Amino acid sequence: MVRQHRVRPILVLGIGGVLLIALIAISLMTGPLAVPWRTVFAAVWQPDGALVEHVIVHTTRVPRTVVAIVTGASLAVAGALMQALTRNPLASPSLFGVNGGAMLALCVAAYTGWALGAAGQLAVAFMGAACTGALVYGLGGAGRGPASRLVLAGAAVAALCTALTQALLVVDQEGLDSILFWLAGSVSARDLDTVLPVLPGIVFALVAACAMARHVDVLAAGDDIAAGLGQRTGLTKVGVSLAVVCLAGSAVALSGGIGFVGLIVPHAVRRLVGHAHRWVLPACALYGACLLLAADVASRDWLVQGLPIGVLTALVGAPVFLWLIRRGWRHG
Image (cartoon, rainbow, N blue to C red; front, side, top):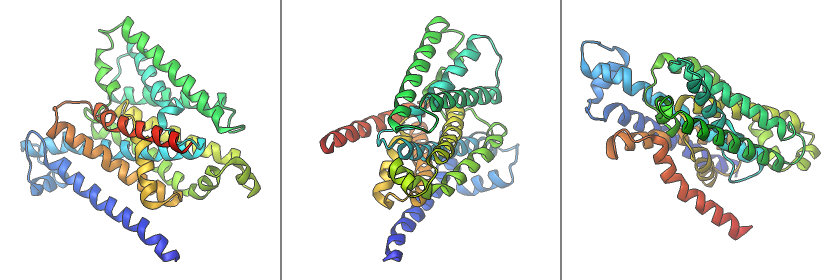
């Protein structure tokens, strides 16, 4: 029986891995200029600056693919953790205020005239996300009290950040035009030198989240049950919250306001592997990366070229979100 319970999650993870590899190949090969797979392989491992195909693959498509994978995996895992932490099936990383905080920090930096390069934008956005995440956690009771308090604090802070961001956009539209595309969500315009320094922190947060999987299972069952089993719920909530801020903050800093990935992927994954987070979290990382990479390929190859990927994920995610609300109302 134990083996049977393990076969399906392992199969789902295996399919996700194969799908991700196929999407990586498609992402590197397709675009305005089609590149054969042999040329792609050579451009990745032995780039030749004299060949146009190598330059395109190495300087544009590889960074874009890496950013899509990292962002999708981070948002999906952060969403699964948020839903377990708040015990709210409609929770997502934006609920913690990290999206709004990152956007507000960037708008403030642009409004005050700071000349920020790609690395500077990344640092400012992450600091904004981290600060708002810490504020929400503090207002929500710092891990004590009901999870609904954390939800309300996140909603209030996110609404405040959004209002302030919109006010800055109205006051200084010309000065903020440079970050409007980022605010809509995009995985383009990033180079590997900007992305690579962020990867160790994201990988550490993903590994830490998977290491806390059993504690997250108990936490999702409720504070009373967790306390009855001898778990330090406060410590677990702190760890989960830090992982959410790190993952969601890094994702927003890299790619801007991409929504719904952290909402729909965990629900889809639970239907495939069950509710044990030792399977849910790795599967979320794989399928979150697949979803965002597929959306990026579709937005630049099959739909309107230059369409922000955040627009596409919203078009897909909004109907799913409404379906989840309706399903929850029916069974509520």
